[in-house]
Length: 275
Length: 48
Image (cartoon, rainbow over all chains, first blue to last red):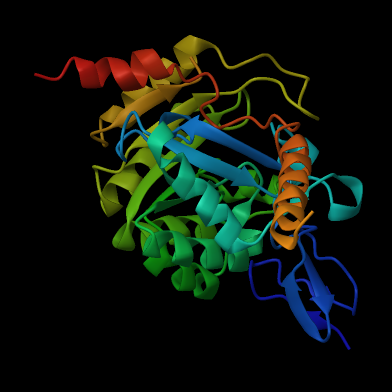
């Protein structure tokens, strides 16, 4: 009998022992569970501005952790070594929530404010994020989630009480573009809307030449974001050729600055990234 | 070696192994080219 995963809109129907589309969830014992729970592939104490969050404890650092797997298929993924792979094909370190939180707490004297769940898509393993965030919050640490926002509403709402800030990747503003990534624009818009009702949210859009770099799309994106709150910071980032998208040049800096100017007509805080 | 020392030694070994794995992957951030001095520390220092 197949069991349906209810974490993201893919709603994978899995046989016992089968991995989901994201490579991070598995059907085990008649339930779909997080297969990457507590499995850490990367860890670094990063400046918070790298997440990027510019309006949340600026100049601080945050212990950033990643696991493996992702529920989208962006051909330009800069972390494909960990996001487009399953646990059988990558080295990881096992940890438990209390050990990670202890480590984050010990790093306070080096400027650490908490834990960022990032690098791969953290919400496919939302159980680990929730367990760590709950403990971290009890210790007075902050929790930051860097996500593509392609998640169902129910698990998202479960996380909201323990998350302090999100950076949500809005990869474009057309359904056709999201379809190429195996995603869905409306779901991501819904995530941004709900998250910004509960905690600090910043949005990042990567501008890829020939894909999502037209003025109309930026006008529509910034108008929509402004309709939620014109004070939501928008990071417009420059693309560099990565992974399977080596067939085009890096985004011209002028394009990034031009689109940022367009977004500023509607939004109060727009930043150019990677320029 | 008493039990405490053994446990500490085991934990240290585990930690070293964990670090060697999790520090070997160098993931990129969305704002990887961020310049912490210019964008982070700089503006804060300029505050009156």
